[in-house]
Every structure is written in structure tokens, then in C-alpha cells.
Image (cartoon, one colour):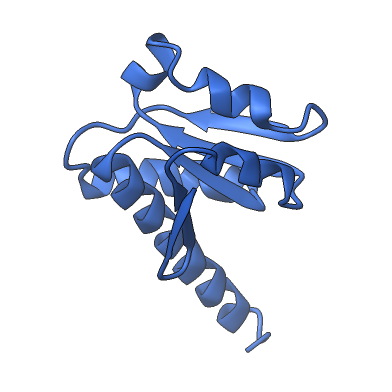
Length: 118
């Protein structure tokens, strides 16, 4: 297994799916594309997740996602409030997941400032 990390951590390669056994999580957001779901390529990830975890799959990713798609994914993120995000797919999926995480963080910061928490 190999690991590349520039926040958030990115695990990839043989055996990387086993890292799910080491993580603490209750709510998971899986970000992927329709092909990964239809082809069943997402199945190993789904079966590796704990059975007691609440899992949401956002499978709307397409090549070179635009801001409308990121906004849609951000809404799903805010609604589900995950403590683990999994990006299943290629570069567009990973870029979308990072963008959704970034936008969600910015919205959370803005809410804290508005409520006088910062």
C-alpha cells in the first residue's frame, strides 16, 4: 500500500481499502461517478465499511466537474455531515471530493463567524 498526503490523506494502491478498518467514523459520504456504481467497482469499498455506519453515496460526478456540481455535492455534504469522505474513481472524482470538502469548510467557517463563534 502507498500513501500520499497533502491534507486530506489519500490512500491508494494494493491493500489501501483495509485502512477503513483503522478509521473511526459514523457517517460516510462516498463520492463517485455513475459508472463506478453501475459496474460494481464500488462494491469492495461498500462491503469494507462498517455495517453500523450511515453511508450516503453521491454518484453524480462527471469529467471536469463544474461549480454547479460542486454546489450540489456541498449541499449533500452539509445535509449528511460526514466524518469520513471516500472518493472512488479517477481525477475528476478526487478533485470534486476535495472541492466539496473545501466549500463545506468555508460555509462552516462563515456560519461560525455569523454566530459569533470565531
